[in-house]
Image 1 (cartoon, rainbow, N blue to C red):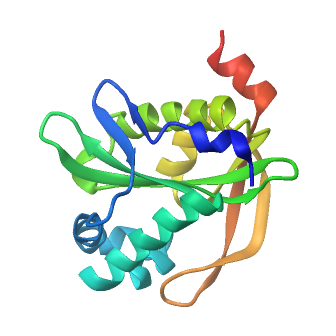
Image 2 (spheres, rainbow, N blue to C red):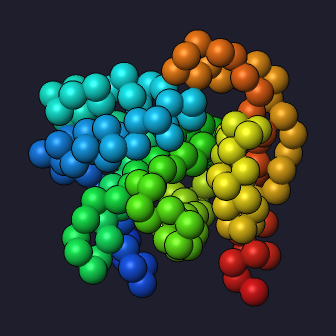
Length: 195
């Protein structure tokens, strides 16, 4: 257990969003988000679709994410739009290797809020949290090779393309596909965000 993590932030705020650790009862909102965006999420988030197939399984998923936070296995946040307090997305720091330490970042936003710069705003806050509070040395993002919007977002957040992971992901339909991998080190963070 990393003792310093007991005092990390459970909530972050940007100009337009509130990014906060999930609470009991957030499963209904998570289910609605996944259900409304099912077609868009099928290829990139097949396990999320399974874990949120109804409100009961979605609440179970949220309870798991809460437990993983305290076990220091992952740190998952819901994203709420401040103007109307609408739940609009999810971001997760997962696959943490505390030896390095390094972690994978994954994110999704509902279609009505996509393309407005909101997720860049959110990721900038989460990246700061990772490097300054979790003291991560390396963050990475895996993204499907046909998901140009997502890998362009990674680049706008300072991540560099490191290569391709061949046959590394199974879609909802069972196809095995290649992924691009993008990385951001603590030195990259200082150079990109601390200018």
